[in-house]
Image 1 (tube, rainbow, N blue to C red):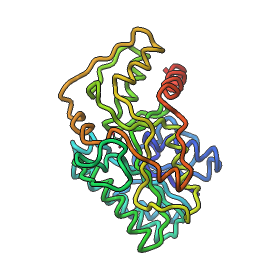
Image 2: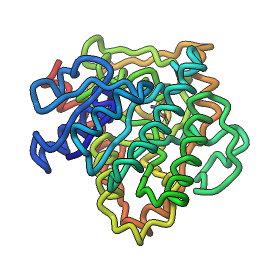
Image 3: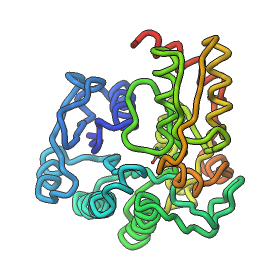
Image 4: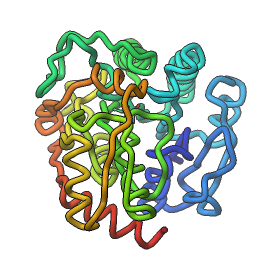
Length: 313
Ligand code: VAH
């Protein structure tokens, strides 16, 4: 059985549907602290899970004996700056509870998402390497950095096969993102179709590493399916995707929606978060260790987003 914790999230909903397509609906237990999201409702078994309640988690592990666990529950960067202590508690203790239970129940593989948010103002900003100075200045960022250290520790000390990816900003149409700094790149598509205009909370030249959700899900499964002996990174793999600015994204959309107009808000708190992150990432180790190759570039992603969103809106 595969247990997905945080199944209602931007990654979780897509991962649950993909895993159910591969393994069959009853092999994938979706779980979250809230009612199942529309995108996963009535599509298979569901459990209520609060990652801060170890007894509740223990009960779910006992009941389902998962062979794989995906822990996707987290508080992201923007919300994390509004609720720093909750973000640290949930992101850190939620992870440690799951790592402990995975050891106790001999779970074969654990996946945990990290983020390019683990880099900070003194990290190299272009083609940021797998190893470098990392001084993240958001609670979300340093909770993910500390989490990477815990993952590597549980691998080294207990032999737990835990795997992780430093995702860039993720863009998809099936589920709304929740409280991140890169979410402008999702909202812009909805607004372009609904109103023909969008006010970006990031300035026009804010370049960030981004990835289409289809690539992110495929990368996650490629890493999880890779032979353990090929993996040289047990903290978290850099993953690059593509880099673009709000201005570049808006231009691509305007080519497909004539008259689309973007404007820019200033002094949004998310601007300083974005400015602390890299502009592009070197993910060569993922290509070496598990044959990673990106499929969606900016034009291809914009086409797919608009085609699919038009059908849902
Ligand atoms: C966020 N979407 O904005 C997440 C992600 C790299 C960004 O970690 O917080």
